[in-house]
Amino acid sequence: MRNQFLEQIKNGVIVSCQALPGEPLHSSFIMSRMAKAAKEAGAIGIRSNSIVDIQAIQDTVNLPIIGIIKKEYNHSEVFITPTLKEIRAVCATNVEVVAIDATLRTRPDNMALVDIIKQIKQEYPDTLLMADTSCLEDVKAANKSGFDIIGTTLYGYTTDTKGLDISDNDFDYLKQVLEVATLPVIAEGKINLPEKAKRVLELGCTSVVVGGAITRPQEIAERFVHAATLVTEKR
Image (cartoon, rainbow, N blue to C red; front, side, top):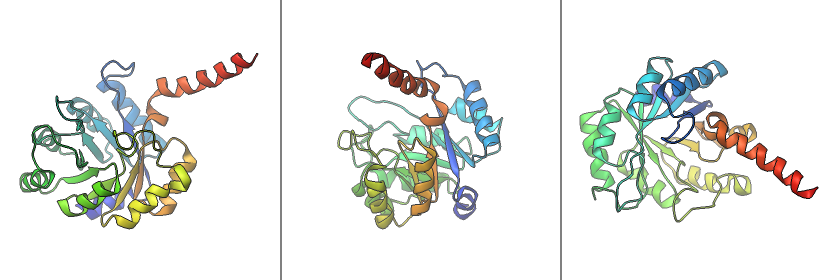
């Protein structure tokens, strides 16, 4: 199963089709159309958040899906498929991959990550698990925890890494990840230009996930508006 999936996504672009409550495009129908557009553009996979969005996308395209549930709990910063409850719910949709926060932070249910992975592997042996990591220590731990894939998803998005960009110094951090990881690596996080996507594949990543640069028009529009504002301020 893992080898088949990895062969499907090799050297390709996975498009993250997500919109949270309160965002203009928050709609499972809209996300399914985003996925359709991504497929027609040549994307080889989709990353999707929430059961309704996953199911709508499954009904629309036949691309492999990395599924997650974003769920916030009190007293924990972990929110990407954080507990067994969310992981089981995503597994039950029959997505090819479930991505899980693999940081070393305390989880909402206080379970050890290795115990979570062991349990899920027993219940859903055919589902691949992707470790959403934020630092090299996360990667090292994920190597030994039973995951199938390493993702750089949370680098730059945790308290300890806030403000960091994976592309800094010609992707120096990613190069370190590739040296440390014993599992296939999917690059994800702030990869907002085609040149960056090309570069991470050149460095040896299995594939690359691109999200906001493609599927968040509000963020895209804000960058253009900001650039225009700078010109106005100079006049």
